[in-house]
Image (cartoon, rainbow, N blue to C red; front, side):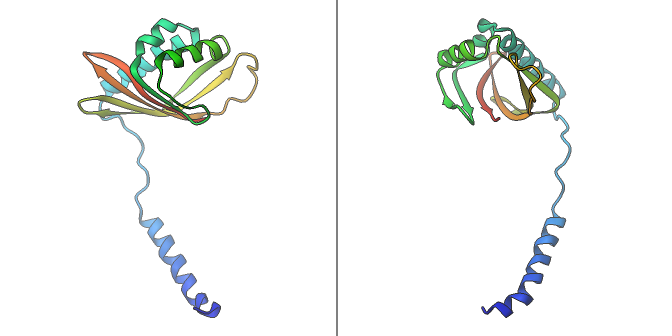
Length: 158
């Protein structure tokens, strides 16, 4: 096609793209389909991160699945429960605190397995409490076994 031919095609193309975008449904506001599950997962989140923030390694160990997969956009994939706990103890304890942004949290059931929790959180560095703390996205897959909840998969983005 010659350059002159594009002059007629480009406006038509732009019109079709914009019409297509306008025709799409907006992303709906989140509404929990199971409010009891939502409350239960938020309580598990609170229990885990209270332990994380206070360096309660026993509680953290109890909540992590033995088959944990922890994906971190800076640190990569970690699959050793003992290694993850050691890293937290060495690098996090007394140095960093996690703050959940509860208004951003979604909890979706995974029938026959557990639930997935999606939301934003931020971290505060104890050495620099006035430093900006930018919210970041996380995803936690919770597995329920015999009535107990375990963190099975975690994706943490910063």
